[in-house]
Length: 268
Image 1 (tube, rainbow, N blue to C red):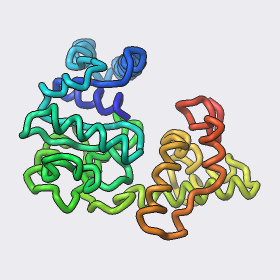
Image 2 (cartoon, rainbow, N blue to C red; image 1 turned 90 degrees about the vertical axis):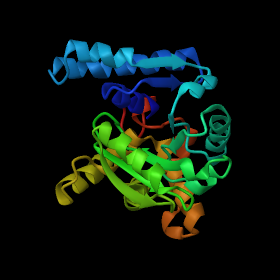
Image 3 (cartoon, rainbow, N blue to C red; image 1 turned 180 degrees about the vertical axis):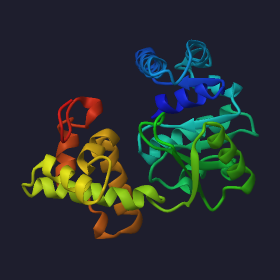
Image 4 (spheres, helix red, strand yellow; image 1 turned 60 degrees about the vertical axis):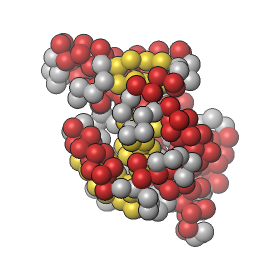
């Protein structure tokens, strides 16, 4: 997700500082971006000069302190509240007082994430969808503390990235995942009960006119991300309808995380 966000920002002429844990992570990220841009060039959707300019717009580093030169942050670390809060603590110290801190969380409380900063009014959700360069939607999530000014700045940035915007309130799952994730979970239950993966996806594609089946989509999202989101919904609402399918837990334990690991409900 972070790679895709960096790419789409750079394509739209933002100067991007891409931070990751290791140089190897950054090399993989830049290779993915180069591959994506080359495909767009081959399809004649961007020119060679646009491809070069996009790459030139991205500076990579493993040093989070470089964020002190930035005006806006989009966090895309794993979907665990403690990890996100630690990143926001550091960003709050490092970045200018005027900077806005956005999270790409798909389900966690923005109020809780912003509570560890001295600028909760300048914290909001900016939830992209995978794959970021292709998916048009961004959910802007407003916590009880987020200011109208912050929301407008994030909306302007999202539109400059050529995304369509919807506004959601700060409840677990927001809008899209609140509706989508229980469906993906039920598809996993169907597999656990002995139904065939291909049949389930075919049924939803032909019977509900979905462009991709729920299990293929789960693989694209990441089985671990899906499980984390379900756990967040389950904990946030204390409602049994969000209980994660045990099969998802077993898949994550086995390292079958979907497309990114080479195996999920399908093999890649």
